[in-house]
Amino acid sequence: MLKKLHNIVEKLRPHFEEGGKLHAFHSVFDGFETFLFTPKTTAKRIGSQIHDGSDSKRTMIMVILALVPAMLFGMFNVGYQHFLATGALADGMNMLMFWKSFAFGALAVLPYIVVSYGVGLGIEFTVAQWKKEEIQEGFLVSGFIIPLIVPINTPLWMVAIATAFAVIFAKEVFGGTGYNIFNVALIARAFLFFAYPTHMTGDKCFVRTEGTWGWDNGQAVVDSFSGATPLSEVATGVAPTADFWTMMNGLIPGSVGETCVWAILLGAVLLITTGVASWKTMLSIFVGGALTAWLFNEFGADTVAANYPWYMHLVSGGFAFGAVFMATDPVTSARTECGKWIYGALIGFMAVLIRVLNPGYPEGMMLAILLMNAFAPLIDWCVVQVNIKKRMKRAKI
Image 1 (cartoon, one colour):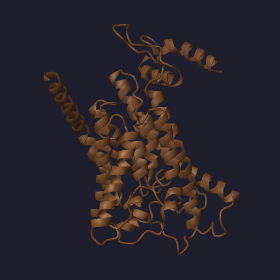
Image 2 (cartoon, rainbow, N blue to C red):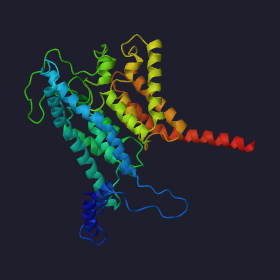
Image 3 (cartoon, one colour):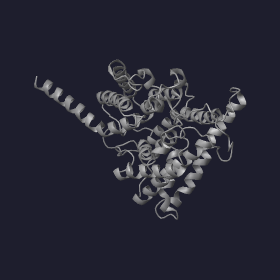
Image 4 (cartoon, rainbow, N blue to C red):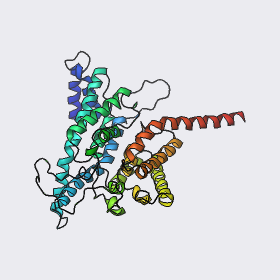
């Protein structure tokens, strides 16, 4: 099957090469071909080179595979929260309701994935053609993450605008994949957060109480249901109703892919075992966040936010998702081994600090990662300078 597909691609190649009728779409053809098959081009045989079939597209695909468990659970949870809100789960969960919940959530989430990829890849394809360059594959991951970090009731046109803003102003103006300073997916979320705050916070944006594509429209919400997330409850001075294990299991309101910590940890195991992401960055974020929250528990003011248990911070909101999938972005994070520890610890520290001291930003992980994205090059520079000075001292001795 693959051989037949490869033969078809080879027959189409002349039409997209220089002088061919479809040469204007060479970048699109090249992107499609290298997505399916290992690139034919290799480095010139000058000096010592390592030739490998793995490229950034395949690395990105590994990240997407790691994101799949969080996405699948997120789809189920969207439907689960909907049927919980409308009272359809009053008699409990059974196999029929399980598949209804998943199907409802899938219909709700898939349009966000289509819009994210459609807008983002459309811009990248256009830029690649304009520059006469290869299509840059970095958006394969960003386009998958954006639908997972926004509330399910965010209008699709807002997601389209935020995606376009992030791709153009946080990536392409810096030179494209590998040159962006800030995480593209987080810039999209930050744009939505500051441009349309009412659609990103509150009790109504995280639960699809209305129907999806005409399915289950007009259902009344039960009186006892609340769509508030645990962090929004803490920010308003109310003790959260969900306990630690409920948050670990993820059956709570929240952004699509951020609620189930088990699914996120499953993705973390895949990223670490394949060497795609740094375990040092992940671990230091959790340690930094736990230590900061513990200090607030012991010495902070007598408020719900300051007394929120340190271990609850680690499973609340987007803390785990951000630590595993966004803070570890190899382009925008620290690259030196020592710098990864510092970078991660500061993200954990800043996330909890923002949560506790600024109730206007109950989800501090987004701002913490973006802030440390800006300081990651400085952290690496300082680490390198320290190493140079140590070596210079040893050389003098």
